[in-house]
Length: 301
Image 1 (cartoon, rainbow, N blue to C red):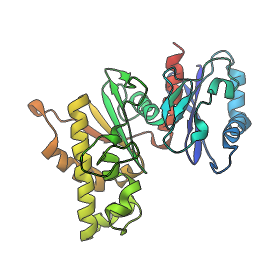
Image 2 (tube, rainbow, N blue to C red):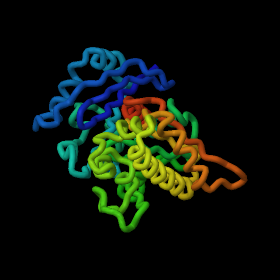
Image 3 (cartoon, rainbow, N blue to C red):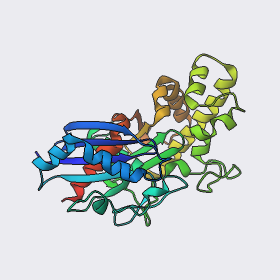
Image 4 (tube, rainbow, N blue to C red):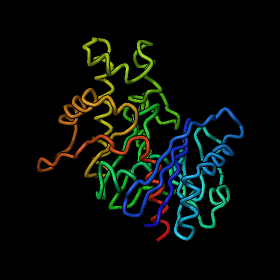
């Protein structure tokens, strides 16, 4: 079977997968990146090209190999590069990955959350579904949406940034200038502020809440209530079959999903008792790379 390569470029690592068209992940690797090095994009290329297994695959399938890229930021409308980055990884802006990797064919580029959603709807937690929303809970809150089988991209590619919906118009602005955003209510970037310095990570907050710490319970309950309000709003706008929760905070498991389910019982609109499924992401740290490979396959059609 022909193969596709998916590259997921992050602030601290390059993840790479080799996937067949029938969905078999033939190989995967994660390599640390040092973004303090001004030449780190060259390191991305040298890392990619130095991996003998991928060079061998490209030799074995010279006419059928496809490469796709996943990266933070907004992809250009033609999908050939990242054209806008919010205050980080500016080195990625405007790189034409076809030229950069020396490919004879186009190398399509997707926003990392959009790529993760594409991977999850192909091989992951919502395989085969056509209406799905994704939230990645980490330092910030990433997001993506699939509507009637199509990734929602919008006029300039910023559609699906679900972490930047407003829950409180009187709240502090987030990095997009959105007041009282979902990202500020649940993201790791604000946990110290939200807990008055008591915790420096959301996972530590969730663990303390699970142990019954009163202050942690109060702060964690506020965070979960905000997340539930955000999901209920997303459900009302997009009407998904499933909402996927990924990212580091999702590893809190029952400490996250049990109270979230209770809050959604209060907030979610359920005509005729229809309840949207809220599930954990299934593909882990390689979701973006798998989605990038899938995007390369689809762009080949």
